[in-house]
Image (cartoon, rainbow over all chains, first blue to last red):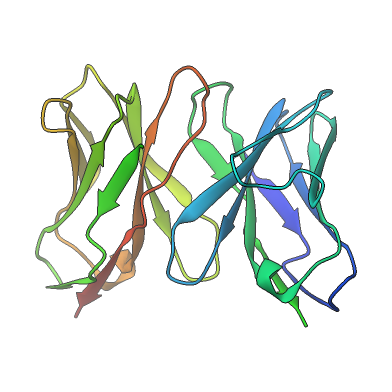
Length: 116
Length: 112
């Protein structure tokens, strides 16, 4: 079945550095991907919608200059956390619709980011 | 503002019993509602989707109901097994945007 691959699964970085997270749809094309973050024992919070070939749409309160999203192809979206700070430490998860708009989402297995 | 509420307390049940999880929403008129399962440290996995014109949906031991008057969805697992232990998330969806907003999830623990 359709699979979304997310890499890396874990990353530790120093405060002030940038981290890039990749999200790939392995056997299907995704014109749209969604990026979520999840704090311990809390729900997934939608950060932004990644659109292939155009700018991402960010949710209210999410800094677009801090969380850079690039969706350069139909199978790859990247999220770059720029100038990371300890409060950015979280679980970041990407997802893509199984078969177009409004269809269920395939999720990656997430990236655990720890900023020291 | 839109609000989605799931029981925040963990649900503990005995193996073989039916688990019932609740999802309530306010200030929202979703065109459909989805349920996902999430295991610790993993991404959610899709289970069922029910549309606003459907009252009930079944898949193997799973059953979902959707009451747009009460603004509530119930998720049932019959003949529960320890392997069903996980966090279950509900997500009402908008047909306009395709975006899913998730509830905080209910953790189910099935004891042998």
